[in-house]
Length: 435
Ligand SMILES: Cc1ncc(COP(=O)(O)O)c(C=O)c1O
Image 1 (tube, rainbow, N blue to C red):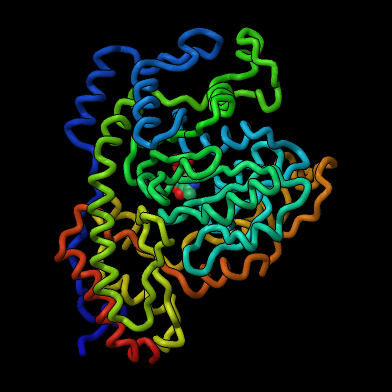
Image 2 (image 1 turned 135 degrees about the horizontal axis):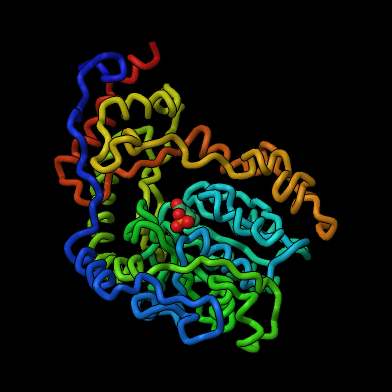
């Protein structure tokens, strides 16, 4: 028995893990090309041929649409912006509800607030962690405008269950695929499984351009509304002769030529990077299964998971010690990853706090100090953001789930074995934690 690092013993892995560095010579050449051109953005915020952006932006959009098998791809400066555009394009507004998961990055829900609609939180599935169709069904009202699903951790949402509900009730499905580029369901790419999908190109994602996002849809009108919202719609609609003025308050959410040029190179790397990540997860699953208190992630039948993070369930009754203490001990055995040293070991208990427990939902204060949009006179529903609202989400977050990123390429077999060894050591010495 060796002493746990948490209690003063030696670490299993004292050296840093390799960093996820996916930017290389190809991206450098692409950036040089743009710099040489002297035109870092060609967008004009008026009705003009440059309303749609410059050559890199337009090439990225065409390549993205071809890769993901969709008719339209629209670049934006982040997935957050993309979600705002997507919600705006559905026509959602004051008085409307958008059903969303509470177990996602905050922007998935904030996108509703951006249009003065209110997020209604449905619970998640206990094994796939995406929105539960059963829970969504209970939340649909005459005010519901859309269901905003999230392919959380890289797992495609329950397409059959959610899309059937949307069809039955005439609702749009907005798919937040920020964490799932390259994931598939029955051969179709995540992002393209609903009416309108959104990807992220931020630094932490599978592929990135620093910041960035892409909205995809097969619907030409939705795509054009997204392009308008991205680029000062209010001064474009008149000259363009676009007569549907709902949500045509525009922003500047445009991507630059630099980011587009980088993203084009990154797209070429997506499939290779994804395969390595998936192989690493398969290996870790095989190895970690030997630890009785851990349950490896389920992949939805028919789906290919993009493994944005490795989400594992922990059974405290089997371990005889609670999740937080166990994971604290595992982290103490390991070291951070290069490039992200300041974040500590890339492993955490749960994921993000259930969104409805954040202060703006608890206090119902959004725009100004009068409770808008929650208490907007157009809103006729009764909001519930109380603790206990989504029991599965709360159980996963506070007791059962943990996530880590120690499977990103270029983790070697030795690196992965060190991760496994840390878990095995803590499992074998868990009695020490009880004391
Ligand atoms: C599920 C999800 N949605 C939206 C976003 C927002 O992405 P971005 O940082 O590109 O705005 C993220 C980012 O982490 C995310 O994970």
